[in-house]
Structures are given as C-alpha cells and as structure tokens.
Length: 536
Image 1: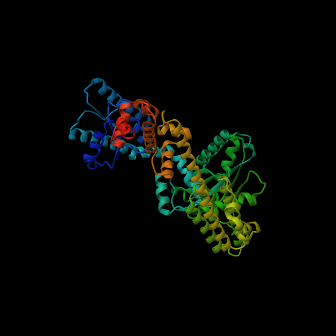
Image 2: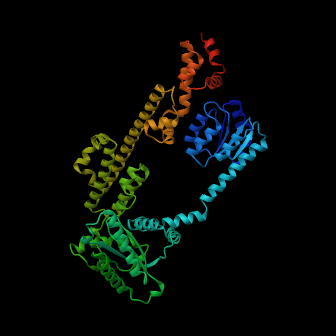
C-alpha cells in the first residue's frame, strides 16, 4: 500500500515519513506533500491508499482537502491531525468519512493504530469486492454475453486448450462436454430485411429462444450470432435421449423451427446442418465447412433445410488458416503489438511452407493482405510505404515480393521493422508536442492555477496519462517542473526587480506569502529577502 503525509510544516512531514516503522504495517511507500494542492497532484498521479493530513494549512484546510479527495477517489482512507480539540472539526471529519481524528502531536500508538485501522478497512472493502459471492453474481449477470463470446471465438478459430474448455464450460454453466455435437446455421431471409437494427436484434433473439424451446427437449442448445449474420447453434444430444436416431432428429427439429418462425414471426429461414463431429476439436473446421456450403453450394435457393455433405475439399482449393485466425494481423498492428505481429508473419509463412509450398496463389493471398494492413497503418500515421521502404518498394510494385514464400517472409519482416520505427518516431513527436504545449501554458499562466488537472484539461488528456508522457519525454515530473520554474522565476525577480516579496509570491502562483517564504527557504536555505540581499 502507499500512504501520503500532508502538512505545511516540512519538518513535521519529514519526521513522520522517515522515523516511523511504516513497513511493519505493509506500507510500501510514503509520499510527502507540503501543501494540499501538492497532495491533490500526487493523488492524480500515484495510487495513494491512505492520507494523513494536518487540518490547519494555508490555501486549503485538511477538511477541504478530504472533500476534494472524496470527489476523486472514494476509497482513499483519510486520517486528520489537529492542534485543536474542536467539535466542529471532528464533526466534519466524520461527515467526510475520516478514519480517525487525532490531536497533535499523536503518540506512536495512536498514529500506528489509526493507520492499521485504515488498512483493515481497505482490506475488508477489497475482500468484499473480490469475494466469491460478488464474482458469482457478476458472472450470472453477464453470462449470456460471456457464453456468446466464448462460442464466437471458437467459431472464428481461437485455439482453446482442453482444460480451458472444461473450466469455462463449468464456470459458464454450459452443459456441454467433449464428444459428439452438431452445428445448425440459420440465415434470415428477405422478409426480415425491412426491420431496423433494434427490431432485427429482437427478431434474432426470438428465433434463438424458439430454437432452444423446440430443440431443448432433446438437445443442449448454445446459440450466437456470428460476424456474417448467421445464427449458429451448437447442439449436443441429452444423455437420456441417446436412443433417438440422431441422424434424422436434426432435420426434423430444423423443419419444425422453420415452420414456427414462419407461423409466428412471418418470415422464412434457410438452414444448414452439419454431420455429427467431435466437440470441441472439430468445431472450427465444421463451422467453416457449413458457412462455405451456404455461400458456394446453395446459391440463390431460399427456405431450405440442407445437410452438409462430408465431401473432402481438394487440397489445392483449401484456404489459409493462420492468416485469418484471431487476432488478425491488422488488429495486432492497430494495437502496437509488434512482437505478436512478427510471430503472425512467421506463422503464416510456416503454414505456406507446410501446406501451400507449390501454390503461388496462396502466397499472393497472404502477401496482399499483409501489404494492405501495412499500407493502412502507415497512412493512419501519416506515412507511406514508399517513404518507409525507399528503393525496396520496387520489389512490391513488380510483385517480386510475392514470388516465393522466402521473399514474402523477408520483405514482410523488413517492412514491419521500418513501420515500427516510423510509428515510434511519430509517437515521440506527439509526446514532444504535448510537452511544449504544457510548458508554454505553464510559462504564461504561472500566476494562475497550473495544477495537473488544469494542464490535462488544456491538452485533452487524462491527468495520469499526461503525467506519464511528460515523465517519459523529460525525465522529471510535472510538479517538479512547475516547482523549479517558480523558484527560478522567483530568484530572477528578487535580483532584477524591487518588487515586494508578497508581490513576487502572487506572480508565481503562491497566494500565501508565508508559505512561499517557507518553500523558498526549504529550497535554498535562506529566505527570499536574504537571497536578495546576498545578490545585490
């Protein structure tokens, strides 16, 4: 856990942070803030769990600080310290859910006890969030979505280990098991085409429910809508129905579904059913075979029920698998997963070597898709393949890169490397632009509010994200930069002008001159006036 101590008295903060055995309570890091504003900036950039704050501080009281903390994060536990035993303070501390209210100076037992109490509360709250009951409730609420995603991923070719299948089927309360299964693909015909997207979704939901009702007496039914618009149902005979002829029952129930949809929903369905196969090993292949049957064999026929024949597809006509198996190549490039994109290229080329070494068309198919993905990402980043590749683009223009699998592999990996480098430079330029905007804004508005939240709003970024970008690009935190800029400007004004110390304080963003003097002395070892006298 991480804790922060807030007080305008620097020696008090330093003493509490350095001399107490916080590590014995499980506190990994103790942050120090010498004002409420500094504390809020730290909360925006660090995962603070506990705050110990003085009540009496310039610019903002500890009570006001807690109020603002509650707006940002309701889980942070706050402990207040005060030199005054006043009922109003204690009442407000309770109002804003402070863990404890201690009089300064607290004893070690009081302070450590209050922090332990805060830790216990945090642990109890997070245990509740992660408890089995809460998890199971959330799982039940999201079961339809999770079930659909699991089946859809498998239909798209996602590889799932046998043990993982068993675990997910059990967790999602799906009564399926390894063994015989069949697929039923349903296509909604023209009668449903006039519905808008919302009504179409309701129709699909109704058909799924009707399929479960009609087939549920004999089979376990698991349905989902796949990306091409088909409703896909995975079916498995229930054990007590094992004596029913499974070769004919699918056609009989499919015709019944077709009839009920026409009767009650006033529309027609076309249905393709597969032969029985081994689930889950053959699921992806059978789905691909059935969807191809819809496209290639059925043609323009409508309102039919057909069984997919178990005819072997000639090897020369087979499709590439790895190229289209999720995650797709373009998705990996879009998310900046460069290592995974490289593995994808190698896997595609390995499949070409193993299955299609004599097929120029398959090599060309892979090359065209990889090239299109490269071009799309390059253009999104305001680059061109010509710029990235230089003279190597001639091999692409001539089609030479598709001539052999070896050339495709070498060219694809080379372009991937150059695209990664070009994109990284683009990202670095964007980071530099954010830093310039922040520094320009701070320079012109140092006398106003230049908190992290205000700066983040100025460049339309989340405060945490902006803080990370600034640190990566400059090597220092934004609050460190602002503090350094204020002190540099204060020194310059003290030496080159005759302005009063309180005027300089206001001009560099310190509303309380006494606090400015304290910060200045902590930085330079002398007061502002002593610094001015030394440099006359």
